[in-house]
Amino acid sequence: MRAPKALFFDVFGTCVDWRTSVIRAVESFGLPARFADDWRARYQPQLETVRTGERPWTVLDVLHREALDELLAEYGAPLTEAQRAELNLAWHRLDPWPDTVEGLMRLKERFVIAPVSNGNIALIVDMAKYAGLPWDVVLGAELARAYKPQPEVYLRSAEALGIAPGEAMMVAAHNGDLEAASRLGLMTAFVPRPAEHGPGQTTDLEPDGDWDVVAADLVALAATAPFGAETC
Amino acid sequence: MRAPKALFFDVFGTCVDWRTSVIRAVESFGLPARFADDWRARYQPQLETVRTGERPWTVLDVLHREALDELLAEYGAPLTEAQRAELNLAWHRLDPWPDTVEGLMRLKERFVIAPVSNGNIALIVDMAKYAGLPWDVVLGAELARAYKPQPEVYLRSAEALGIAPGEAMMVAAHNGDLEAASRLGLMTAFVPRPAEHGPGQTTDLEPDGDWDVVAADLVALAATAPFGAETC
Image (cartoon, rainbow over all chains, first blue to last red; front, side):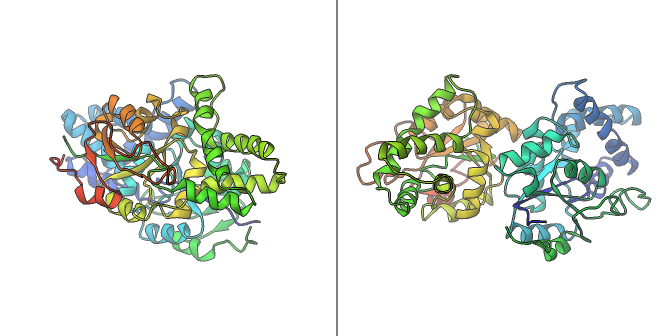
């Protein structure tokens, strides 16, 4: 194993605690906490309509808003247009996990650090400003016009940095993300986030694959860099 | 005039002193200083072949390398493949002007700051790491697959941030860049760089248009922010 030149980060769940943040936002509009889980539950089915080509490329802000409108109708909650626009921005203002900012700052000293997320650029940039995430560059879904785990997202992100897939390391709290990255030759780091889905979480509690690195959090990941590898 | 939400920066010439840096690099390979000017002189004609559609989208690293190979043949300089690859990276390691890093740090406190350059993402990211340029996000030519002053570059950059063109301000040392941006509704800031082309510079010594802001350098620009405007 050689040291990576760049670290690619999953964002929702891995770097930020979307659930606590979105619950706080929906409750501020008088909606129950489970609205946040229902909102997120629409995410993968929505992405799948884009992945399959059923609908053309659509950024996540638009998908979030469509899901929000549908759910508000189901809940019978009559929010105004301005309120809906404001609530949709909850996904731009997600709190980092306690270790995230410090871990990223340390890793940035040694590597190019980039979000490779399904979030669109505006969302990721707003979140970085809000949460203090010190990205070097925003890569990911919007650049590739595809959604993880589609190969284009990982490959286009590496290409944009002028590096081979094997020179990048994907960092994620989700085994499926790492499996897709690994299949394309990227190195992999698993960082468990057992509270991402709240107290009842049953998925991604443990690494399911033979990932290159497993670290308790991003500060711990930085402490192991350059990951026991020969420096390239 | 309202305060912008994002500042878009030209990079070559505006943020970094490409000429001094590239002269240093070519001289380290035994080439004369004028090689740097000859290299840069191929830039606009090369971009034009992409703008006109004569050749498909091609990133600047590739264009730089083609021009380098042609010039080395003209100069009769037999550099090896490894030396050519290394010298081509001179464009990834350009020194900032003395005010650039401080100016960008200050502006970043108040605005999203993004390069909207004809440089490709890898080049801009490497340069940011080398020179300490604290970009929030890398926008510009590669995202748009077009070269300034084509409208797509400015418009796609604003779209990626989820803002209207009129909510962005283009900052450049080149009147032509500001003219193109202004025509699309962007705000404009002119920062003269009278030494960009060396002691004999005759172009862009003064603002040629009715730009929203004229500042002596990027620290001066930060000192005028939010540019005497009502805050939005």
